[in-house]
Image 1 (cartoon, helix red, strand yellow):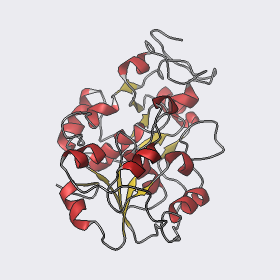
Image 2 (cartoon, rainbow, N blue to C red):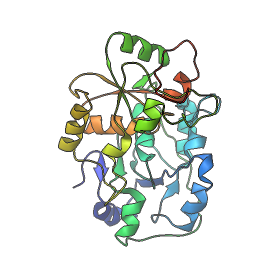
Image 3 (cartoon, rainbow, N blue to C red):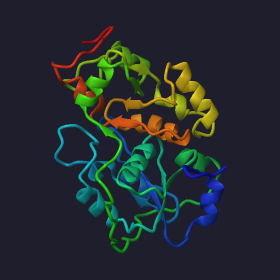
Image 4 (cartoon, one colour):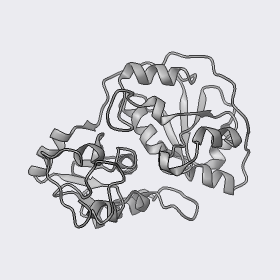
Length: 282
């Protein structure tokens, strides 16, 4: 069932071609994956979709990947996709990135954005319409930035919050969290922040079946099982601020606002002045 956060494939298919609807393919891959998401997009995508390049939409000057850009940078990039304040946006991808893009739009004050439940994998599995080739270049639009980015936490806030016993939840895999596997980033130590708890993003967005988000009641149960009380403030982190947004998204569906540590472990693990716990790889 579609709601303010998710749209089901049948509902999206019925609306394709509607004025002011903008569908964005947010598929993204780490360099080590050896594939080009834009090339994949041109090979097959939802009809009418544009490609949203997370790398180009992020801060070009940060030493950390996927960092939130300035409002001017984001507004210019999004406006070039033909998106203005009146657009209804639907996001999809082939893995775990849509929630990050959802968070970016919401952080800059645009709330008319939803995620396709089940993403590209479900859309294909259900035999829904597919287009090929590069899309037409959209007419540029003015995308207003209504506020400074909301819901972002820096390393100082995370450090202070942990010292005060705040709830910090890490969306990485258990082996990355524990430090028994390397961080995945050159020069970045393994492990986790003292006091953080682990809740892998795949719990909230299972990578099997129909690839749909966990329903709110089940999501709340998963948070509580991990030791997180959703009714209290939550800070979310991961490797580079992407999958942490999945936890923020699920908390929003529960009516709870959470803050995301944008630099995440990529920043924390490089700093010798911040504490960390590791059970294996240093």
